[in-house]
Image (cartoon, rainbow, N blue to C red):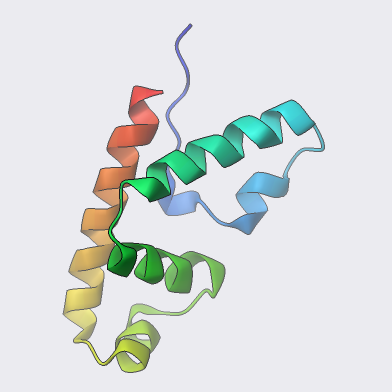
Length: 89
């Protein structure tokens, strides 16, 4: 059975709430957790700030005392890592 890949850029709390089907929610939650487990603690923090707190890269950079381009690069790398995991499902 081939599973559809998920665009990790679109992963947000809303992605997990589009259905009331508990089996679908469990499967999606497991997929997100598995993808997040591939990240370092720093990458998970960036992803959390970006997608759950909905901060801009500039806001994340200010909060973490980083350069905005560094935030952008690290988020891109984190997304690539997660996409690899999700596309293997």
